[in-house]
Image: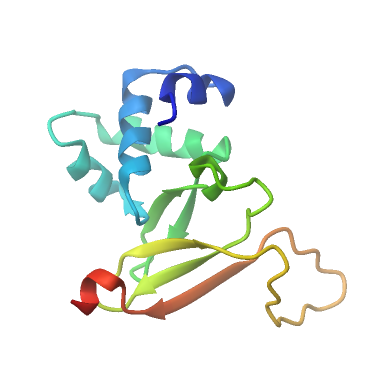
Length: 141
């Protein structure tokens, strides 16, 4: 198990109780979480909305997490795959959206996966996003 205090310090952040609690919730989740999901999973740990939003923004800026838009255009947050001890070279990944429960899962992609997409001259692609839709294992039961 990763030491969250040391992990936050390695990213140049103070290891506050709120940051540790929020990071812990994200690490325990197998799917991207909305602001509301995170608040619910915090349970009795109270973190005000502004602090939660600021923490999620800081985590995004420091490349600890990334955000992905849900079907209803709300942001959901998930740890970057490399922070789950997947090699840093696997930054590109796919998002799987369950058509029933609407949860969003991150899937690693092979480094040389070809995604056929034409780009007009002059455009430089920094990252790719691939969105897959279907039914997650939990909803198939």
